[in-house]
Structures are given as structure tokens and as C-alpha cells.
Image: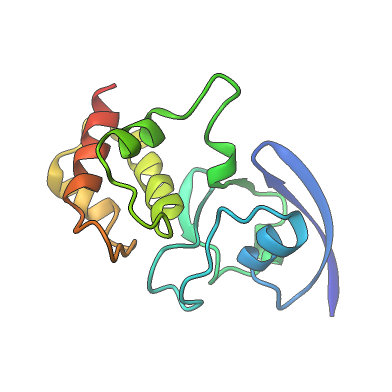
Length: 153
């Protein structure tokens, strides 16, 4: 079954016809062509597909595209501006928190949601905020340091 929806992604509206079983992740990657949101596990275990919906982090692999109809979606592609990278992106680079980069988009968006609500989080609050995002490369210390610095900026 098909349904017409409008996804508001990174400030742009996309009028799409989607299968009602299509996930938001699939719509973002396949219909809109934004591939920064990664497909890691498909079952909500790794967080690589994290996007912000109405400012809150969600696993786009677990949400149907039709459920996101009319919602504001932010992907990693929408974070930087023409003036440059977002402070969180800069901090990740400066602290070496980017290794293979596969988890990075979801990790950065989870960090953004945290810092939008709490610009000066404790280490424990940072750990809690990114607990749904798995990283297989960095061991998390550099990621935590990057988020701390971005909160100070």
C-alpha cells in the first residue's frame, strides 16, 4: 500500500509517495538521497541511524516514514551551515573522536539533542545521552571529551 507524505528534512519539504512499510531511514537514504544517516543494524541496537525528529533523537530504522509525516527531521547533512561546521562537528574533529566515521552522524546528533537541552552536561549525563549509540573504534573517551568541549563553546 502506498501513501503520500511530506517529510520536512533539514528545513526542506519533500513530498513523497512511499510504501507504508518503508522506514524513515529508507526514505531519507533512498527517496531523498541523504546518505549521512547510516544503516547499521536495522533493529534499533546501534544508533547509527539516529536523526532528530522535532528535536529529539530517534532511531530512523524503527520508525515508519508515514509516522514522520509533517515532522521536522534533522540529519547530519543539515547540521553544518554555509559558514562552516557545527561546534559539535568541530570538536569531534579536534579531539580525534572520528575514527571510521560510521557511528559519527548518529553520535553527533545525539550529542546535539543533549546540548540543546543541557549546554553544560556532566560526564555521566553525556554517557547516558550517547548510550544508544555504539562506537566500535574510539572507546568513547574522545567522544565524551568532544561533547564536553562543544558544550563549553
